[in-house]
Figure 1 (cartoon, helix red, strand yellow):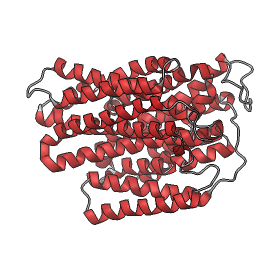
Figure 2 (cartoon, rainbow, N blue to C red):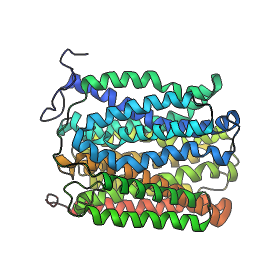
Figure 3 (cartoon, helix red, strand yellow):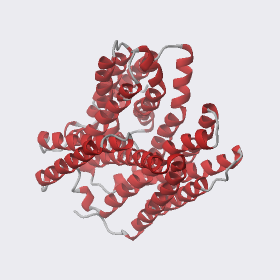
Figure 4 (tube, one colour):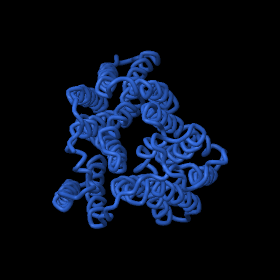
Length: 463
């Protein structure tokens, strides 16, 4: 590591020097990979955890749910806090908490102790994800921002692809606590490197709105709980109460934060057409991903009668092609508008989802794979340009709020898509997979139109 990489280096005018940038991105992407891998790893481990801790499948699902709720509820508050105390502090604090909580997960002796550790791990992941995009924007020079966001999307795609394989490999030679314990060495390395290389970012002068943060956390928690409860066919009164409660608290939050210079829920940024359209495009697109990745395993196994191993293989082309396309789209986004690149990508994604919905009754492996490749290419072509449009449409002092909204839009879209897939299955049984894929094609078409509509925005955002 270069001698000049010491803690407390002030942020350069346009990104970091090349050597420091390489080490800083190593720290950023290592932490992001850990947080992204952890959801997939926990999903694979649920049967083993249930057997070892002598609990039921209905109870053990909370190992995933409590992590997701803690993550989604605190993304926007942490992003807002990052603008005040510095993005690098939130990132490193989240990384430290995530690493320590991973050790606590590995040492858990009961379901209750594991749930507490997972909630803390979700808080740590929120600290990482809430300011991830903002830090990438500070580390790379402006001429390379698209490339940086492409690399970020590449890391997430690879983590998503390898998560189940890594989890299965670890479980084949060790017990489930090791799935969490392996985070310790990687976390420690990323912490040390990050402390030495992450840039200090500008700090806002306004105070942190604690009541607003609590309202935002309660609003997001109830909305995600309501969507998840609907997906798991919970009692209708419970679902309605959770959704209405979330909307009511959201209304109170909007009333409280009107006129605030930097609201926790970034309503000021949504007044900017490019930001609002990029957020809407992201929600629709990640809903497509949620619809696809919930419905396709059931389609392959229950309708096409493929084994679990074959199903894993058939799902792999999508994230694998995303990993290939993300850096390419990132480089192109430094030269071409996000509206064009995102629109073309979502047109491809729409085509791929339609082709999957129209699969013949007994398709060959090749017939499935080339359709998945089209979906992956379209999704990968969308991510980095949309992320760049998100961040470029926000003023420098609101990069934290924009970064938090990037992650929030992604998780809202994925959760909504998963819930809609469950609704499709409840509506028409096994044929729900085809309905979910067709619905995903419709969502991709709406996202495509939203993306192209950004081309009409020429002027700078509203001051």
